Length: 117
Image (cartoon, rainbow, N blue to C red; front, top):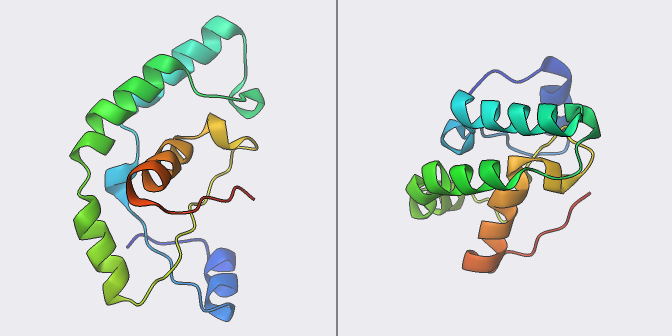
């Protein structure tokens, strides 16, 4: 678990939502740099991005998702009695964030229903 901002912790605790930080799903610095280069070549700021670059997606899937232990992840969710997963994101467009790749994997390989809010 990582430290979460006090205000987020306050609201989550009041709604009985448990927070879990999964660092194994975070893109590496090298993968993030690939996206920065794509954004630079497109003349696009991160906050304006509407989708991730193909190179980022390929590298994220090959380096992160391919090695992520989803069975262990699901076991940990079962242990705490979780029946829903929320992936927090700061990007306005889901397709502009690596969490959309995780969501696609959850939907396509594990039959989770994904709703972008």
